[in-house]
Amino acid sequence: MNQVLVLNSGSSSIKYQLLDMADRRRLAVGIVERIGESGGSAPDHAAGMRTVLSELEGELDRSALAAVGHRVVHGGDRFRGPTRIDDEVCAAIKELIPLAPLHNPANLTLIEAAREAFPDTPQVAVFDTAFHQTLPAPAYTYAVPAEWRDDLGVRRYGFHGTSHQYVSRRAAELLGRRPEEVNMIVLHLGNGASACAVRGGKSVDTSMGMTPLEGLIMGTRSGDLDPAISAYIARRTGRGAEETDLTLNKSSGLLALGGSNDMRDIVAAAEKGDENARLALDAYCYRARKYIGAYLAALGRIDAVVFTAGVGENSAEVRAGVVAGLDHLGIAISPKRNAAKSKEARYISPYWAETAVLVVPTDEEIEIADQALALIG
Ligand code: ADP
Image (cartoon, rainbow, N blue to C red; front, top):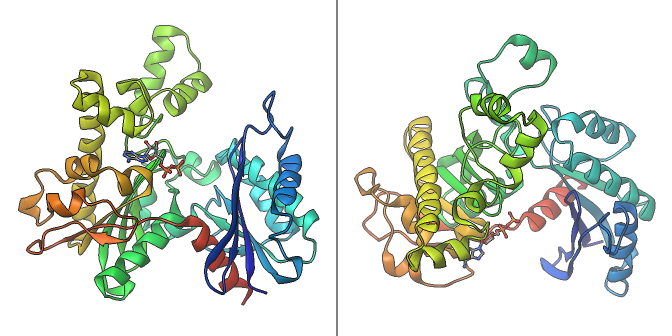
């Protein structure tokens, strides 16, 4: 019993990995895309699950399958860790749909389909929010009326928790220290992006909020802005809250500033002298740098700044831009180490720097599989 199937469903996709946890090897990796779209291969997530099963034919050994691990986006303040899925847990994930109207329904449909496909295999939910349930009240509280906070669940939850948890533990290993001994700031810079302040292995603040919109500038999301802007846009243009929400999530960020949501395009265009792309890159790096400052204040002292995810792992330009000018705080990178291409967890700070700057490739699937196995024992 050493196989784990990890399922990660977006609103219109299912990513899957079949892992052999005896030697931590990937037996199969795939994605079913454009679910529910015309011309897509599957009309809904249940059909998508059937596609996954047919693609796994030959690799999947049912008698060796120890668990199915599901990434679930929103666990509210109810789920603080990996959870064995039963009817009650499904009902709770359903109750949380108002907080994640696109993601939780997709996650739930896939869970139901997987429970049907593997009725005798333990299914485990791993929540994107769970790692951040250790945030102290001053960090998760928004200064809004009690009715919003108490009855409507308005607070910071944070996301990318599985990645921040995995990366912060790997970073501690790289430093040769126990996670309980180290403070660090993790910058998960992918399509979505978030910063996390980690004290002694626990998340104490994070930049995404009640939804994944808050915080850093992302591929298509604005990140932080004045909350009065929504009402202003409504008054000026007549656009409603839903449309503005969609604009801020899907048509903002790097895409709005620099014309592409892909950081490779932005860096290339900026280097050719495109002023919009230059502004997009500079604003992106400046926002991330501000969060380093904020989390340095939150943590008091830090041992490391850690870059991860597509942009953080691959873009030397972004890493250099983010930490630019922080030498006086002991945070610096070696241009040579930063430019070296590698898929390994590594130092990019110079030997003399007080604070380690690290690149640690994230692996949410292996973390989900590890957590699922640890839970079922
Ligand atoms: P997701 O959040 O969807 O998991 P990833 O973590 O894979 O995304 O990050 C995807 C992003 O990584 C892409 O938008 C792309 O711009 C960026 N990226 C990948 N490789 C590079 C690179 N060499 N330079 C800059 N950005 C990169």
